[in-house]
Image 1 (cartoon, rainbow over the protein chains, first blue to last red):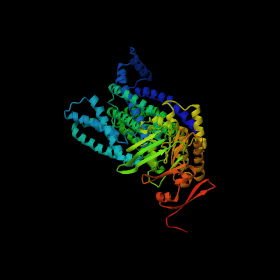
Image 2: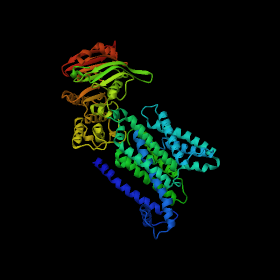
Image 3: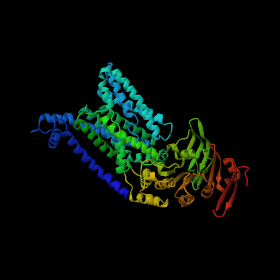
Image 4: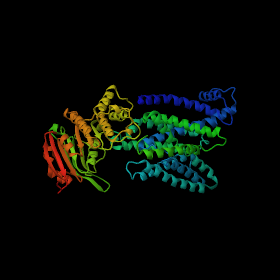
Length: 349
Length: 270
């Protein structure tokens, strides 16, 4: 009874989320300093997609929608989606509902890598930023992941507490290192602060071109291993005896999710807790099956970040950095989860 | 080459050693397990029983020596083919996240299903049967995280039955069960064994249950095999004294149709 209910809800959630996402994209594109009609938004998108002539629409509105709002909206959806999927995968692999790119310190590691590129440039090292920022962010993210796993591996089960503690310790050290980079950056410190707080205001079509293939690839890869990820929930010994190559699965998916996180960070800075909240809520709605959870996480993460970004861009009187907004909302949520998990031991979730 | 094809051992271990870090757990194990016998592995806590089972199931690879399974080096078995042939019921079965009992049992089908295939009608019947035989049909829709230790253990056995392997490894599969459920579970596995549909190697804790359930016993202590042989021959006071350091009295018991052991600490009497 419960199962069919959950299954149906899971099945219903897909078209529902896609519809909500499309509606939100359109609504968000109308909002801002310059009000544009919803109909006009669709006309502009259709015209740009099929190269049709535009008549009767304010050319300023066209420029605002296509060159300013749409790339930012697309970036919000892609970044939110990648963070949601990464969170779901980190949680499934580490058997830990508190894991996500942010609580594991990976976002901070990627931000350190990105900030390093900026400082190196200030000191005259000529690196092409379009390539070097994502590459350094990925190196920072992978380095952090390896360090956190090494620190937490003392107890062989990678328990919540040791894993999150290791993530927080490494993130604290990296934050101090970023502080030092800020000090070195001196007058150009503003660009680095952007990475610390997270913002989508700089998103361009160029970013979308970079994000789209990796967001698709990462999500499809995670979905491809959905059943293996389910079986990981039974622990290493049982998973191995069921034919799951646990070592390869971990390596491939942890690397893939770190890459998605690093790309998110290199475009939008540190945006915490999306990857924590989204899969957690979805598990309650649609059950823990990763074959449903992963695609649902992509859409829900995209929706959540788009709503948050539209709020800060067009609704709030001043633009609050989106990383601050998600941390303010997600932090207390994390506290509740952490407390509840302590009380229930390892059961629940 | 072995010319007597019928007696190709299930497992053949040659000078197998394994350890974690600097401390060896198993030392130069020589062991042949033949088909058609139900084996029990016995020994005190920390003697290396679970590690031996990990080596037999291919979860860990030996640091020295060779293990072959059905005449083929265990390392050379493709993971999927091995999982279709060999099932494991671990001691510490756990499932993170709230999968239902049925979903957890369905995981046993993993090595038999293509990546995006759903279980067929027969597969569903196999799951129903596994749930019924282990007495957990009524729990099918409960989240595994809300089960008692004994219920979890029965889920683990049901999962292994759904996996439908030729060979089943049990790691203290009855340690969390009360006596009724222990006997029911052992009878279920023994029946499948006697029908010839499954070979069994079981790590056991309870000597009396082992004597009742197993044809051959393997005693290990401190990472070495102390003795191996038919239950009637090796279950003796001398062996038990050597392995467990307790005094014992062993008598044939008509009621259970097996030898049963009584223990006391050395030198103590009433």
